Image 1 (cartoon, helix red, strand yellow):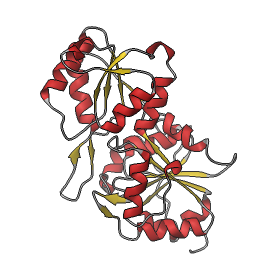
Image 2 (cartoon, rainbow, N blue to C red):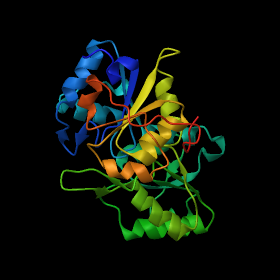
Image 3 (cartoon, rainbow, N blue to C red):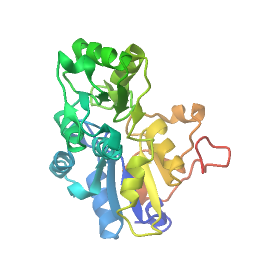
Length: 281
């Protein structure tokens, strides 16, 4: 690793997953080896993902299958963050919840002390929780609409409109959530990036004073969230963001690189957030 590389400047790395370390079921070229080098240099590695489809154990198994060293306790998901958010609201305990999402999300909601409800009672749910799943259908949207119009509170894992796949972007939770919010006339409280919950949870696992950098492919979640959390940021162009997208964004990363492998090479900082950067501080 060259002296003065981006990796030399930080003690801990918060990696996004989709579009940063892998796309679909394929690892980004050189990414497993890059993380192995970081670990060999005694760098701390954490994985922060807005993807609401899997549990931490399932993400750890996927990462291992793609050649990454990863343990569940290094992974912070939007599902886990939402579970903590719900559990921290004592007035929600025992209330009924309509969940639009994966089994992992349903389990997190139950773990937070809420009771799941199904059609036809869903329209009377106290809470609507939105993630995304391959089986999303109009009936779920209709039930969420009716529950929210009757006064239910709305929560969501994240607002990512898409996520990268080998054949092009697929609709993400943000697309489902937009439909729910418009139909229900309600704005959701979100647990995932760029909100602070996931970053705070990951920082709590590190020694005080560790120099942390967020590595992600989305300006509006990874980079915006890192800036709001007071952390350095690295934007990679291996996912949904192209170099030409940055000029029109209010969020300015500390570094912009082609892929995570460039963390180990001589840095080429592109932007340094100034006091006028949106969300900075």
